[in-house]
Length: 115
Length: 112
Image 1 (cartoon, rainbow over the protein chains, first blue to last red):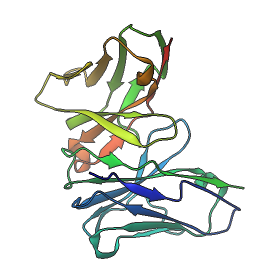
Image 2 (cartoon, each protein chain N blue to C red):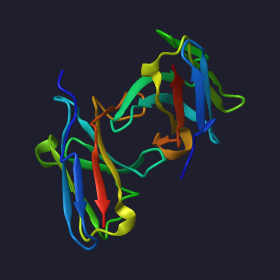
Image 3 (spheres, rainbow over the protein chains, first blue to last red):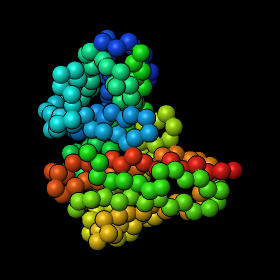
């Protein structure tokens, strides 16, 4: 089966600019996650979707970050305006269903650098 | 907030040796997962162990779980160069609505 697809792989922007990331999960996977991974740390959950509804966005900085999952398939994550501390890898993952008992399948991420 | 914490932070061993890394956590869990991340890539799921299980095997991987000590270990036997990666434990806490939290990881380097 095809894996989780993410684009772009790399993005460099200046602070205060906006940026968007795209994710296409594995076909049939109902649950989609966006993570932020800062260098040397583990992934931190930003938002979790179940189909096209939000399950958990408690750690999403909503004043600058937004995410949507149209039609319960693809998803986009946007940052506007970007800050220096947003430099990180943004990982998308999907699982067949929600709940911690399901393994998550990750894309290779988008590496964001803020100048 | 961090639940699981891996130990050691970094580990270098000779090819062919066994590698052991540990994960400690603070609150009761539903299950615990181990993931591998190669440099510049996404995480890959290795093993899930439930709170009522004590040991699981998958190929050269062995995972143990001791809920009384709130700790888990991942053993990689007969290590290979391809095992060079970061390894993360992810815990699903009973007290946090089953939310999964990743630790900071152990960076494993296999020397030729």
